[in-house]
Amino acid sequence: MAASLSRPRASPALLHLGIAACLLLPSLVHAAETCGWNSDSAESKEWQGEFFSAIPKVVYEGPASRNIFAFRYYNADEVILGRPMKEWLRFAVAFWHTFRGDGSDPFGSPTKHWPWEDGTNSLAMAKRRMRAAFEFMSKLGAQFWCFHDRDIAPEGATLAETNANLDAVVALAAELQAQTGIRPLWGTAQLFKHPRYRHGAATSPVASVFAYAAAQVKKAMEVTHRLGGENYVFWGGREGYSSLVNTDMGLELEHLARFLSMAAEWREKLGFKGALLMEPKPQEPTKHQYDWDAATTLGFLVRYNLTRPDAATGALQPFKLNLECNHATLAGHSCEHELETARIAGALGGVDANTGDAQTGWDTDEFLTDPAAATRVMLSVVRNGGLAPGGINFDAKLRRESTDVDDLFIAHIAGMDALARGLRNVAAIIDDGDLDKLVQGRYASWKEGIGARIEKGEVGFEELETAVMADGGKEPEVGSGKQELAEALFHRFV
Image (cartoon, rainbow, N blue to C red; front, side, top):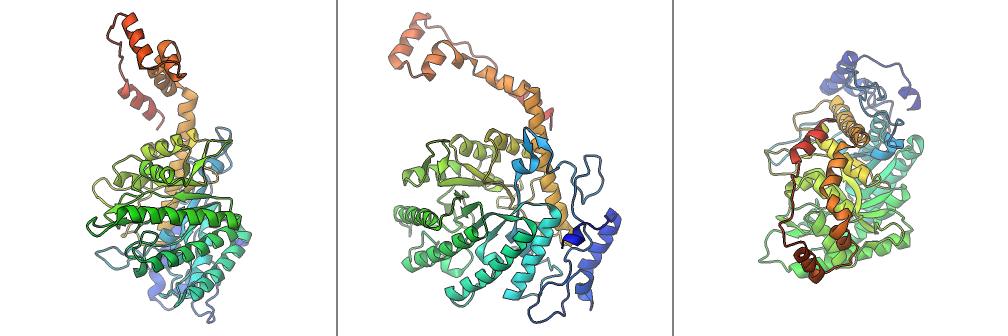
């Protein structure tokens, strides 16, 4: 693999030609060999050669570049605001969307048939897919990856068989991590797809389902720890209700809290130092999901004493939030609102970078490529002092109509460049200082006089009434909010 990454670069036109051949030829006899792997290999279906032979390692070429397989804004080692871009951004590839997404939707069959796939969900196929994923991430220059347990390894007839399958794939992933230096940003358990979870996992009315989910999360946390994962995520897609008529919501919330408390206890026993990240989403697939948005989830964590401020840093532990931009949209918020809500609470643990479509009402998981939106995201990240040990995961998928292998690269490059451009824009905004001065000016009255006394806790209602009366009970002087100016100053750098 290492040798293939240092090959002379092909022109964009030749790249398109080669990749198109890889995609179009699976209907022909020798398509697999053309795309870099051997479909006639032994029963083990081990990897043979490259999966993405037509695409060289993606490098930074600068804003003037016309090469769609090069970065225009993301220069990993370039120092911005005192640290390398890669440390601010900490990009991760989502295994499920990138390597398990097939383009199907509730109205249509799969549209993507990647050349390395053989149509099975076998263990051999899982290993081949993992090799393809690491070649992709290596060529892309991503530092991290994220996974669901059932996306990387097939489910067996029993939990023991399923765990054995997972162990086999994780052993290969560990080898590939050692070769590439790529490691998990986080792992998680898929507790929403299997029919057993149709009523929920931790919130199921069936106790044996709760127990099965606990066993699955225990194993998923183990393998995340084994692979050197930096966090562990909980996304409760079925932890909610479709109707309150047949739901004991209080009992379900208590069970969810108990489940998470058990997970925190297991974290300690494992010696896992990573954060436990809750990922809010208001609905879909349930009508109402209990971790509706950042504020609701923080309230739940505090209500059940599941997280508390660190004595030294003030950041919440062990639970923080991993926030997805499209989930914010579904909750009626902007992404920056959710990020700021978590940041202020010391709970911003990671970002799932994507966006939705304003004309639809569901989770479309599109790549975030809008420069203004990316800049707003990065403003929160910089204000937070970064995201480590969290990062930015591309929880985004190709459109159903995008079916070429090179689309995988094009989409991720565009997403990485957008956020890198956003980081550069934030640096320019900070260096300019005008926007910050405007905001500080709006709150200047709190720095002296009665405002300063209020902030210091020196006065109450009686003292404030006395102060107003002593000033003749005059109407306060209230100036312009200058919102239009603020927006203009922001967009000056976008």
